[in-house]
Amino acid sequence: MFRTPQILIVGGGYAGFYAAWHLEKRLKRSEASVTILDPRPYMTYQPFLPEVVGGSIEARHVAVSLRRHLRRTTVLSGRATSIDHSSKSVEARMNDGRDVSLSYDVIVVTAGAVTRTFPVPGIAETALGLKHVEEAVAIRDGLLTALDRAADLPKGPARSSALTVTFVGAGYAGVEGFGELLSLSQAAVKRYPEIDPGELSFHLVEASERVLPEVSAKTGEWVVRSLERRGARVHLRTTVTSAVGGEVVLSSGERFGSDLIVWTAGTAANPTIAKRSDLPVNARGLLIVRPDLRVGTDDHPVTDAWAMGPASATRDAWGRDDAWAAGDNAAVPDLSRTASPPYVYTVPNAQHAVRQGKRLARNITRTLRGAAPRPYRHRSLGTVATLGLGTGVFEAGPVAIRGLLGWLIHRGYQVLTIPTWERKIRVAAGWLTALFLGRDIVSLASVQRPRQEFVSGGRLAARPSSQTGDADAA
Image (cartoon, rainbow, N blue to C red; front, side, top):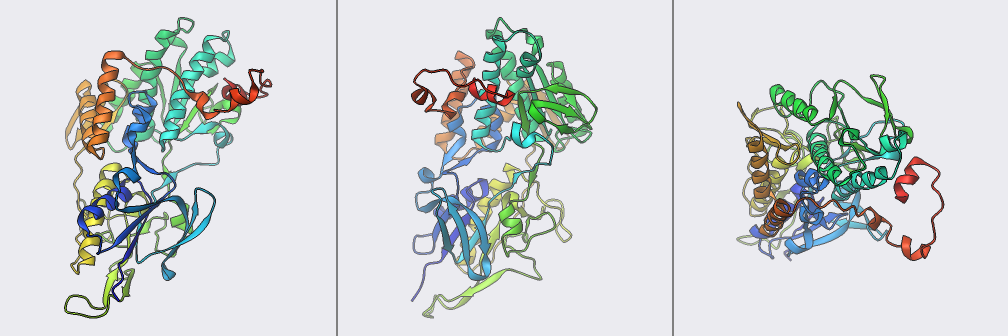
């Protein structure tokens, strides 16, 4: 009897969401069933996280609901803990704590990468990342809460630390988040007559000799000058050696207190993919894929043959490619730069992940219908970055546009690429509202402790014993 193939997508980020979304558009219900596994019930549009940090976009508007837009896909809320392709099973820990085993015929691995950390003392206890919407909201609320606290403090170390922000890592996430938070702070401090704007202290720390390695050196230098003109300090060829208790110590010997520390020093391989899977990975822990996004190499493909009987004029037993991967957890050959091994690989950004997800859907559909998959090829449309309200950059080949026009191009490009018209309209409406009504500078940090007032009954909480406790109690 003919059995409908079961397609399991591990990861609901860009590549996973777009693969599922376009499989729904291309496949009939009788051709395959699709399941997507992710701990979050939404896809986060990460290019907008810096604007969530800056308060330009409502946090919910950068989260695309999986259940709302994937109407024929089964959505499972959990995280893959291991992949055993030899037995066609994925072990998963569901959000309610259950451990389950999921079987499949075709697997699509789009679990993404994780934030790369180093064993720097104090970072794990004090720093925030900037990869998820919850972190972006926490960073924004952290700054606004610090302004409220600093306004009530006398001048001294505690006040200086509250007004000091440190970003570690000057890639896209770091530079954009830093620029947006700097813009927010300079707008918000106008509402605090107790604080001199000169008291704000912003530090961007980068181990290499330049920021934004994806753009030209000339544009990178312009970005540094732009941030420094606005009062920030950019520390190049510098690392953080300690952040214990909120005291940042730099490799240059400089040290200062900083209540808000954001770690954006790159990404690392997903540990489930790199260490708990029998699919082939390279030295960096990324899945080895062919140009058409099938896992394996031309010499050692990962394939399987499963029966589609009974044999007939249209269906018979035939071999299938049953393992696919894309996005940040895969080493995808960049055919726009080289067409044969050894390959140069696509950079891990949204522009590639979105288009790889679409190519996945096309190729899986083609193989299910007996056709050959086609290679993924995409030439970069250029790079865009925001440095805060009214300042940005756009670069495509020799063309570099900076300042207000670069910022407008950034906004136009990103609103066009965020999936679904519903989200495009919500984001654009938020921008329009902010244009006429200004920034909202209310911190909602207290929502992280919604039962505090109910439980305390208005009684004073115990005095915190550490600097971190002060921040939590504010």
